[in-house]
Image (cartoon, rainbow, N blue to C red; front, side):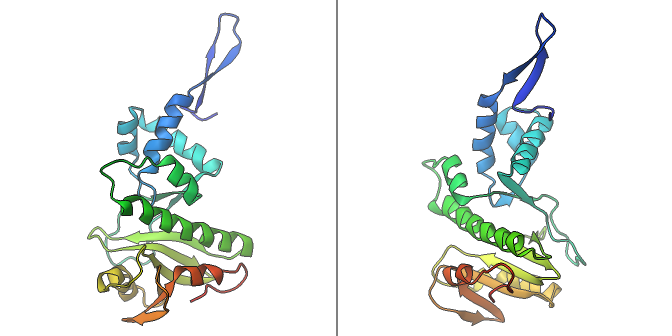
Length: 226
């Protein structure tokens, strides 16, 4: 049993072990943990918001990963020429679960929820493509301390791909900035931008695909559709 688990133990007067549920604390944690979905995970911030110890929050995160309800993506560090961040990114395994846990607050912009949910949808399919196809490939993300970022980096014998996901119907020059920066440092990779438009485009050496076309072509055992 994990320390700080949703089940804690204590001895009653008869010396028997009694399980005590702490579901209210865990429910609060789930809500707070939905906010960094698709963003870098700061355990100290979650602990502060939950009014809980850091070890307790780490234990709760471990439960989510064991089930598995959520996953942490590590930062891509191979042959790094630029200083990268230290924290992992957190994603719930299903964008519907994220949407059900994440409260829609009056001050939230639509993109604060729709964007991370869209990223999570793509991640779901990428993980299934790797798992069902038994692909030798791991998923990371990349972010420098200067703020350049790529949502997903797929690395392994199945290929080396940098994937950016944009919840928009057009491609702007600023949308390509992270991919182009990454490609400068890793010219071996295939940069790919997924968006909600209708056309396959090539902009500044970056292939831009409609996300529905990409997902339909994501077949386990076959190469990434790019």
